[in-house]
View 1 (cartoon, rainbow, N blue to C red):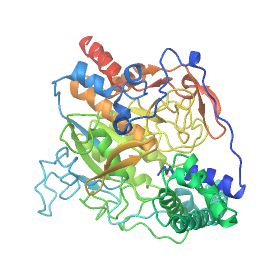
View 2 (cartoon, rainbow, N blue to C red):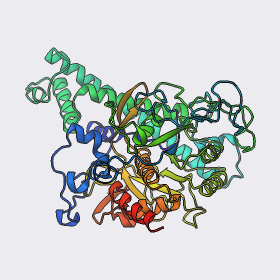
View 3 (cartoon, rainbow, N blue to C red):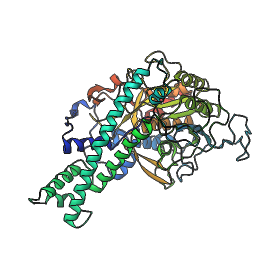
View 4 (cartoon, rainbow, N blue to C red):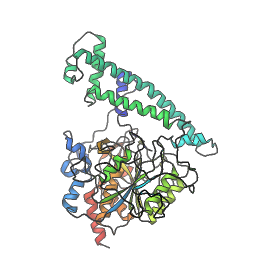
Length: 539
């Protein structure tokens, strides 16, 4: 499971300021003449633009969205198209959400809640999908499971051990550091609240403080730094840094915990044929905070123009809800069987917003991808959030071994974009790769559905992939004669070819998109539908 700490990045900057633990560096500013012919968005995004930026148009709005609104206005208009089933392989999905409950796939061959496998597909009462994780939630990372197995003959055992030691030391240090950061912010906030006699003091009021009191001056400095990072209040900073601490503790106590026994399904995850009593028919979230799958689903298919929340990319889809990803690394067995389940039950697109660097049974997943290709299913995969070149760094699932030949032509891997057209176009966390990343799409600060009829922003290639899955669904709905391989080609060939240089990776290297992806393009729904029409009519 790719994990992104959105607020962790600014907290590290706070750490550098408060404790001298690091230094800041300048970022590349792309000269206007190097940004093709498109203007740069100079003003801050409005509230509406923040919530919908991934649907906007670069030429019209100077925001690098996917031109979804333009596609509906000028191409789709009132053409509903053919219904497309999109399988979302993810954590639990709130299928009762006000913006999702009317876009669910229903297995009409199954009689609800009769305890029988009416359609003989191997899954009892699978009405809206399947839960391969069962009642489980917390899980280790795959390399931790390898260490727990004690299989020192595994060719990657030493690598896993080194990675574990590195990450354990890193997050133990971060815990100490963030405890100090949090305490410094809390102390400063409490001091300022006492000074002003209120909690909602302003940036202007803090700047006006003049005192010889050393503690109050220190509190002023901390608050001014918080405000300078576009954080609206010390209360928000407290909340975000506390959230970071919870994430750090989760890394240590869950994902890196060698003693954790997370799997509850009773099957053998190393035996692909052990399916008896495995999982259940409830794909909903098991715990509070399990919101990833719901957010991903809303990006693809939240009901459009119903007066609630937000609009999904696609207008005529049914979501097949498949819970295959725990709070940690997914099991290869679950992923392989989930792909096959989706393909066997009519899905034409699978969204897979997850990934990991160790995969003991990667061949099971590749076989499942090939099986999906034979069923004409497009597999849309998130590139990952490690700021790495995945042509060299291992990343699973994949449709090839390393940069070798692909086993099928139905997998498209997606990197992440920000709202900023220019040097900062790529999300700082996104993976990349000339061979293994196909396209880029909006993935930073994407507004979508969360459990219990709520909505908020999330960031990650996990958000970029469903944006592309939504565009793929539009294509397959409007032009159902096109194959999965053709839809992949359209997504790659019709995007905007960006020639501007951008910063990418941990070292902020300066590259063009053509150097770090196969297509060198950002996905564009308007262009994709035009190309799809041409391809379909040429048949």
